[in-house]
Image 1 (cartoon, rainbow, N blue to C red):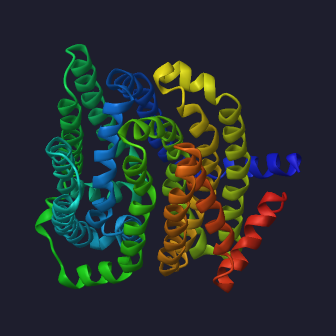
Image 2 (spheres, rainbow, N blue to C red; image 1 turned 90 degrees about the vertical axis):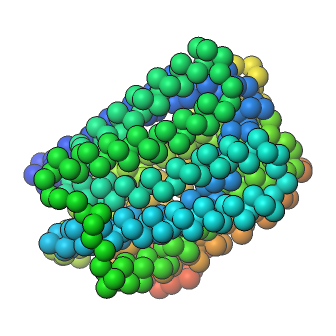
Amino acid sequence: MIKKMRTSFEEVLAHQGFRKYLANTSWLFAEQILRIIAGLLVGIYVARYLGPEKFGLFSYALAFVALFASVAKLGLDGIIVRDLVNAPGKRDAYLGTAFWLKVMGAILAGAGIAVALAIADNDDTTNLYIGIIASGLVFQSFEVVDFYFQSRVLSKYVSICKISQLLLSSLLKLYFVAVNADLFWFVLVSLIDQVSLAAALAYAYSKQKFGAFYIQFDKAVARELLMSAKPLIISGILVSVYTSIDRVIIKELLGVREVGLYVAATGLVNALYFLPMLTANSLFPAILNAKQQSEEMYNRRLSLLYKYSLFFGLLVCLFVSVFAAPIISLLYGQKFAESSGVLQIHIWNFLLICFSAIFGKWLLAENLQHVSPLLTFIGMSLNIALNFILIPLVGVAGAALAAVLSQLITFVLTFAIHNQLLKHLQIMMRSWMGGK
């Protein structure tokens, strides 16, 4: 089996197209590695400075906004990349229309947050923090520039923009720690991050000499995009609830300190999610091109992705599970010692994310994105129910267990709802057993 894997790996490396995608992925990896380093040297330093309670309050405010953030995205991310690959001549129409759709989505999300704040039992300070973070949603509209560069396999430019934004953000946080600043200033950095990244992306696109895409808006394209993205909009909302509701529930059942303990551990796991997600995003054009050439090549590329994801995911999960306690102690200190139990459990979500990232791109390539809302709804419902059951029983570790179980059960149930999904399971199984 190992010999077969080595042979297939050498064949892939020799392919010229693969080298192009590898160079593109390398830029993305470099940016994300720097982001991880900043998270370790700056983000964790800030968490230690704030302590579990203030860090928990900050994390709760971020989670509250995240519940509505997907409305601003409108599920257009993968759709725009796909359409730009398939119809590059309509670049300005797609980018401009998507930009204004995202602006409208951000306004709608802001209105939803305002209504939720009127209902929520939060103090004025917490509501202020949520409002500051939420005001940055409108600047995410400039991420359509990222989609253009993805479609052209030119992620170098976006990576430079994000590295610049990361440097500014890190320096500001270090300065605020040095002057013993209040939590307010760290919340303000979240808004500055969105503004600075939007400015950097706009500048990078202007250097391409294409003109201003944001003066374009095509009603026909808007209808086309929204129709294609409709299931992904619903799925995105469900994902936002799925990935953020645990922190809100923990705050209501246990308090903001426990939110801080939980986020300290899950933040380390979430930092690793870029590996499978970035790989899937970068290789998505290659998957689409293979589909256009032949079914055999298409299935072969998917099989290789699943095979290497399994081995890599297992290695990461086993290592972190064994060394969870010293990892937490080294990074966060004894104030966060209770986070180690959460980390030992939650890391196993990484293995499932390795599979889900590829599976999500396959659904999009097959135009089966309408399945995503059902799968996400199942996972979200299970997660919420398990949180309310397990948190009172085992404390904050119950939220981590709920996250892994809900993801696992959903993954198993996935292949029982559609014949084409069951056929795709066979590709996964063959790849894991050493086949091509």
